[in-house]
Image (cartoon, rainbow, N blue to C red; front, side, top):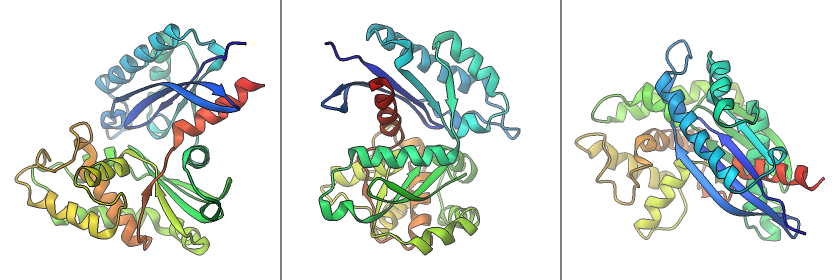
Length: 310
C-alpha cells in the first residue's frame, strides 16, 4: 500500500514553512521542505493593521505552497495550516484569510500562544536526540519568533509550564534598532523591555527550574551558524553573545556584512535576536543553550501524522 503524503504549513511572523512527509515505521519521514522569509510582522502599523505589501509577500508564498501540494498530489484532508502571533494580532486578519483561501484552499487555524508553546515542545521532543539520562532532565525550551517568544518547561514528553510573550525579533528590530549604527544603549533598552514583559511570567519559570536549556528559533540557528563557521563549539553562552554584541557595536553601519559566518538571509533580524538572547540569559540566569532539533513545524507535523493514521 502506498504511503499517503501530508503537508504541515506554519505561518510565522518571520517565516512561512511547509513540511511534506510520509509515515515510515510509525513516524513522519520528511520528503520535502519549503521555507520563505516573509517577515509578516514588519508590515504591522501602529493600529495593528497588516500592510498590503506584507500581505502580498505572504500570499505569494502560499501560492507557491499550493503548487507544491498539487505536485505531490496530497489529499486536501491531509493538509494542516497553522498561524501564530502576527495573525493572532492583526486587525485585518479576515482580509488575509480571504486572500489566502483564493490561492491555498485550506482553512487557517490561528492557534493561541499556549497551544503554540505545546506544539513547539512536542516538536522538540520528536526530533531532539537524547540519551536516557537527558530524557529525564527538566528542560527549558525557548522559541524566539518574529512577534512572540514561547517558554516551555518540560520533562520527557510532559509539559510542566508554558507561556507565550510579546517578544519578537522582527517587532523588536523595528522598535529598538532603527538607526544606522547600533549602540550599547539599544541593547540595554531591549533588556529593560524584556524585563518588564517577563515580569510575573518569570517567577513560575524560576520556581520550577531546569537542568538544560534548548533554543528553537531562527535567532538561535543564526548564532549557531556563526559559531560553526568560526570552528567554535555549538553552544551559546553569555561570553558568545557579549562577543557578538561587541562586534555589532563596532560596525560602521547595521548591514552586518562583515560578521563572519552570518548568512545574508539571517542578517535583517540578527541584531534583535542577539539582544533578546542576551537579555534572557541575564534575566533567567541561563548558563548555556543548545539548539533544539525541532520546533513548531515538527510539532504540527507530528499531530498531523497522528490524524492521517486514524
